[in-house]
Image: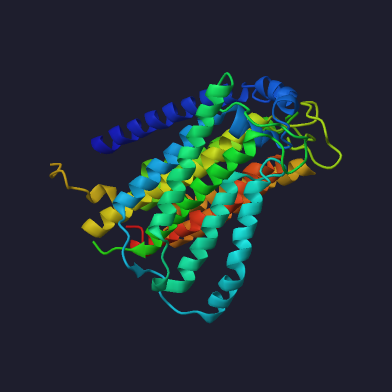
Length: 232
Length: 123
Length: 80
């Protein structure tokens, strides 16, 4: 009886505390005026003059906040490194059944998905898309092959690690070149071109090609480590 | 009731965040905890993108008919660029956590946090 | 009209999050999480953020499903 009563009082106190905190937090969040443009205005105004890229989001990711993207790519690399340490790649595939329908469909879809991924990477400064999205599309194509071919298909480790490390090094070298030639890291070192053409935007397209290569190699490696089980 | 969408977006995304946080605190299954963390992350993204949207504004992309960048008819590109990279990072970090869960399950045969006694009994 | 659409998708996302957190079967949770990703893709598109919508669609369809379902295959489906 006594124990039950103390429990009820504690529960009431905790519920009261949580509701008061929620109300205060909600009041704070409702009074924030996030939609007021401040920095975004400036970026939209100087975007056409400084990058000639038709997609302002792309120019923010690669040009105005390039150092940020470098940090995020390195977080991606570190977490894939941790996954590879925790789940060593075995030889047995979890999906080792034979399905003719899947086989025919994947053999038609695989080159098309690779082509679409490359298209999304190359047109990152003209339309929605870019290195991150195109890289994940390419990794999805490799994932379909893992699901279909079973034990007979594996990534060539040398090619994957070479493309990943070369693209990461190229990304950093591009930033340092900007530091040498211009005034800050990831500045424009190439001619800008005109807005709306494929060869425009200067350094943006090169950065997104490097990011796309790196992301596709890492996410493909992640999919392979998850699909190919290793018995502990 | 409100003159714009922002208070409603804020309240509903805060409610989703609260439900996911309740799942993280109450549930005992490690897999469910990581799933609830992902849902909380998505609620944060919705809050961030939704509060920088004003009805009628277009995406910050120059396309047919739009050749000029003007904040009068385009939304803010900065939060979109931040959230775009954060989504990719989020799935990689979730995969890292799930790989630890798989490893733990293969070592012990369960994934409940109230049965963990690898560091000695609690009593 | 578009406000009504945004609000209905947001409320369905709230219901989906409750279903994800409080369902007993973990495979139900994972499949509902895929639906949650689809709804948030639509919502990002309505918020005129097509870049984020493309990222969420690709991640939710391609990688997230693999990671969660393979983790479920290698562990147990039942919560308990």
